[in-house]
Length: 496
Image (cartoon, rainbow, N blue to C red; front, side):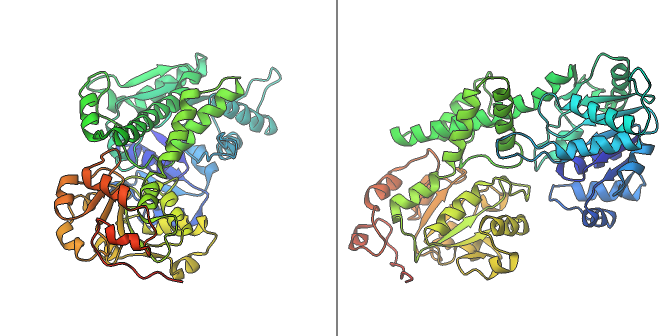
């Protein structure tokens, strides 16, 4: 089958490469000449495990090509996937300008029956807006008859993606469901036949395709992400309660996850969720409800909890070291919003790092993959160029995890990369000025760290030494109260 995928970002590139892997001839289109040149040379612009090999293999086999011409790709395609960005606007709504621009280009270039598939995450009603935009383009070409019907028929379908960053290829090639929203018109029925054939390889062992009306398909994506975000925020609130009553959120997670009605997924407390989906989609869902006179009280609360959760580790630091963090140095392990990606969109690390810098601290950061994306994100946050950021003495990107903690007053773990799971804390204790670990992902064993002389603070995993530290460390580091500090390491010199 001939396929065009417009948009070579995260969703579009994974979709194009995986469909090519199934034997289709796929043209991936993007307006960014630099990105297309990189892809044509066998590189990939994003980090996703296995994606580069998949792209190179299918490109070498002649099944996957890259272009900047939407018109050429549409003209030769049977199915056109729209997989462009829908960034949030200030009011929380999804910005559809790129989706509708592609729709207009499809209408200008189509030369026969086309199936246009919305792969981008879009609000309810977008399929109708895409259809109207294509019709307008056909009308401008004189390809609409006197009764208003187009001379060239087409179908617009909703096919939301459910890809997890870091496991996107596995999710695409072994999906738990394929949601397809089609109309009951003759064109819709024709599209259903073609898409059933396209997705047939995924249904050999059991049927994974869920056929539904267009509005339901569009809303399913938002509902799924809102539900997953709700589980995360719920557990983060439970972690705060666990701290207050002296319980362990990890034990609670195991206890409720064993209930088959609940399950174990997305029950891990931490410093909040980030990325391109959950924050954007929960806000867009609330905005859609507002347009219909409704308020999504649970979804709004989920977002509020997540915003507050990104401050939890900072609150612990302030309790221990005081509001003024000048003269102190903090190590941060992990910058991407989750492991196995370089995505920095709404990453909790940005909130934590920016707050530390605002209080005068020096911050040394390390991430095994996301350094370049983090530099761009943090430069944007602070209104600096990349060159200015790299010369900024308050923020340093370390070449290794060990380098980052050397001389640090505390270590903050923000992303649970595998390389951070089993560090040699006995060796690290001799490199740090203060043996303080703030575990934003509950990755470490509190008892083991206590035995090594560390003050450990997780999320909802309070232990005796951390409780003692919180009671005794409400002081300025330069204060005489430091003599009573349960962290028996040298007092740092404060900068002016």
